[in-house]
Image (cartoon, rainbow over all chains, first blue to last red; front, side):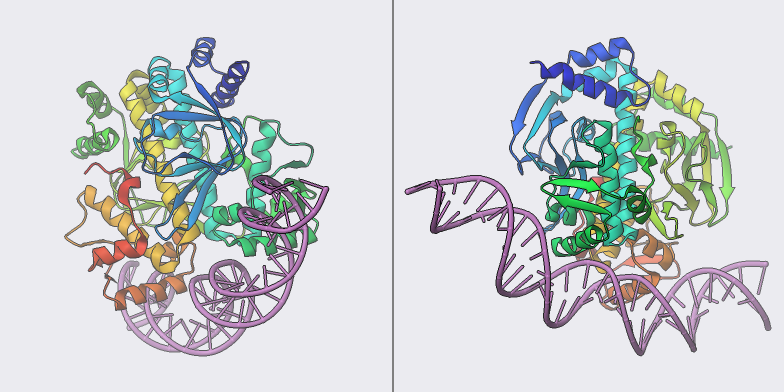
Length: 242
Length: 242
DNA sequence: CGCAAACTTGATGGCCGTCAAGCAAAGTGG
DNA sequence: CCACTTTGCTTGACGGCCATCAAGTTTGCG
């Protein structure tokens, strides 16, 4: 289980944010029991309203959180990449208000609620970090609210690309100005409140204007400054360590 | 200072959620130092990016949190009514990612970060409650994301009315099927990603269909079932005590 | 009473949704 | 290795929801 050290390295670094955790706390994290599973693409990990007694850490691959309307339409709430802890909130809310699914085949570590609860009870610094994670989640949601409410299709796409690029960069998954992009046009549509047809047309204009390129499941950003300006993007909300 | 007991009664009840806090914790809350101020309508309380060294409790009146785009457009992120703690997050994030303003003239209690931090360090149950508040804030943001992304104007308005009615009801500010509604049509527009002109037309159809009425700064819901059905509203995300 | 803010309504247009069809890519099984 | 199927991408035609612009009316407040 070579991976497990890796997992909690990721987790400790992510939780610590700018300030690293005390050694004892890090060790306690390393001692957490965990179940590591590989999950195929497009599978549900967590069901809205269903019971939940584990939290998960994304080790590899991409996942998304979403809500369904009764008429079957889907709204994606967030995307998650390696290092993310997408459902820490389930420690407090017995049944989640959203579903989570894999986008790509993913490797996910599951940690029982009971152990995380003990951890947060015994190590106040970790409890603070959990709280901080929730606060950052809310900040990210706020950025999405503003995108959905006040930006047009072009600006929405640009904003999402900026966010994903920076988040992937902090976990070292970018390669220069390009990055893996497993999302389908329907995923963009469901995240941005659009249809896939319109996403397609809008991507074409961004491509034709040389701002970015999306090919073979990779996104290449040719003109970061323009992308950022189109999106009116301010990375502060992500609270990345840098 | 008759009000201060009131304040922390509100605060303790809100923080406790379903489970009331231990007595010692409640007492500690009652001992918090605080500054109570009355603030006129349409004044800023908190500035995006500005420093922040207090958290606030809304005692009376309505406030809203918002973000501005560089072109001056505004997106409202949430509305706050008496009993709410809109900026607990500022304990963790040095400079807020949103501004906050009064909607009506409001009475607001300010508590220094340092005292809240001490409180959360000494009383783990309170720390948990603060964390829980952040988690609920995120859940509410998610409900807004879905509204903004996937509902039309009519459904958005219906959803917002459902949310506000239930939240006001838990703090006993409704009167049968009616409630105060100080929001202007431009406020609805900025919250729902619409223009005030379109809000006006959409309100008219809801009124004409006898679903609700908005008159003299009061909202009256004539047909809750229809409103709820139009909105596809599920109150679970609010995690109200009830 | 007078002014400003908010509400109302009409006309017009654009962004984006819907419907539809064809194409490309990727996976499956014989 | 190649039919076959499935999934995703692309493009066109058309229409509707909602934005924009503009003008008039009502409400609220000093």
